Length: 289
Image 1 (cartoon, rainbow, N blue to C red):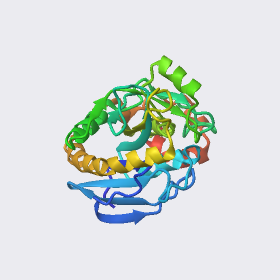
Image 2 (cartoon, helix red, strand yellow):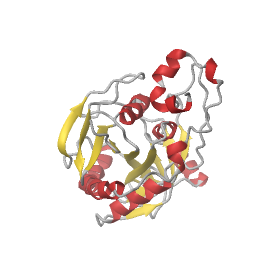
Image 3 (cartoon, rainbow, N blue to C red):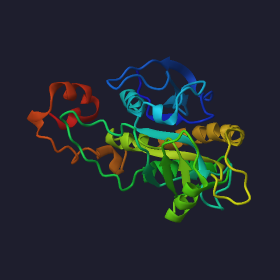
Image 4 (tube, one colour):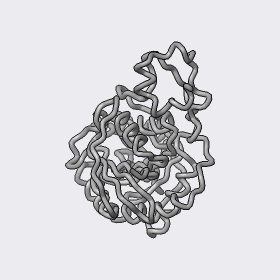
């Protein structure tokens, strides 16, 4: 099967990608369990694209319940090199308004109980994560969104909370003091796992609300979130249509993502358990020869 070079992970409100042509639905199994749903593979601008709804079709999976290891591993097994996360988020800035789109470049982790690495069980690796989002892919996503005519910003720190509850006013005020720009529940551990899998990862973050810090805006509610997500759904799909040819024009990957594990594995090779070598062969096989 021809590899799917571009992977799209759909967030809240984005459960289908109807723009894909020549569609095939795949049920992928991984050493980490099943992904959130079947993966739909199709073609855009001559590029094979894989689409996976993060919360499952029908939105059945809590943010903390998402099996991100299975999701990323499954996309990697299909040949995906570029992963774009579609995410809903709250804005911590006056100038990032609801229905704006932001391409973040930094992350702040406030999650508590999510498996956030492929490694362990006898294999230790420490990746560099100073730039959690791929700057090259982020630039392509920014250009793709610009082509839709939507209001888009580039560069932001995305704070990720455990959820599923929204913030208290006290938390929201403190997060603002920390200098973060966006708040959401799903960018991690996805970004960490994508880097461990040596995949380029970027986000198309859709602002749905002002969290609860804003003195004049209404506090965030599910109804508000859904209304703004639905308004931006068409923009998301248009942006993906613009993104595919931009990715197709890339001649190789010249970023650090593609070799993230080259100096990360510290375990003595003959000490790595056979079962771990088998399960992680897709990720580390080339470094264990």
